Every structure is written in C-alpha cells, then in structure tokens.
Length: 94
Image (cartoon, rainbow, N blue to C red; front, side, top):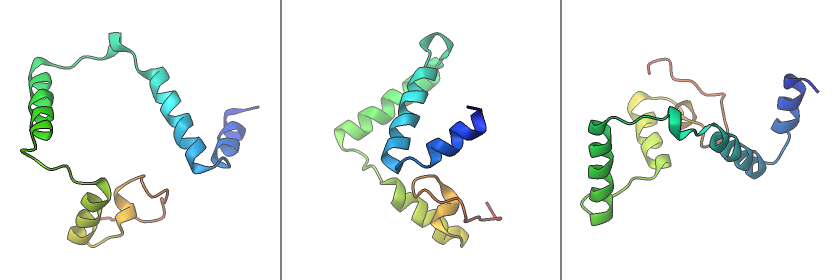
C-alpha cells in the first residue's frame, strides 16, 4: 500500500479515530532530546501557567477566539483553523 492510498484510507475513518491517530503520531515525534525551550520561554510558560492556575486570567475557548477573528476579518470561522473539519473557507485578508 502506497502513502497516497494509506492517506485515503485514513481519511475514511471516523473523526474521533483520526484524532486518536494524530495524537499517537504526534507523540511518536515528540523527542525530548530535539526539543529545546529557551530560559526566557520557560519563564513565560510558567508565568502564563501561574496566571491560569491563580484565576488572574480566564481561558477563552478556541471556537470563541476564531469566531471573533472571523468577525473582525470578515470571513468564515473555518478559515482560521482545523477544529471544525472544514477546509473550504478562506480569508484572503489574513
């Protein structure tokens, strides 16, 4: 089976199954030895984590963020991401 045929087979799987597959594939690529985070980014990550945990900031769901972006730029929310399983919308002004 070639890669193109494999991809076609995978795309026929239910969305939840494809999501699980993506998760497993991404984990297989996660190599700590190739992954470097600068001290400045580590500090920023800790700061953001602490703000979330303390309640100083409120997380905003991705669908709300993308909806606001779509309204601001005048295009379909699907132009901003993968979360809704659509790739038919575009926003040329981005």
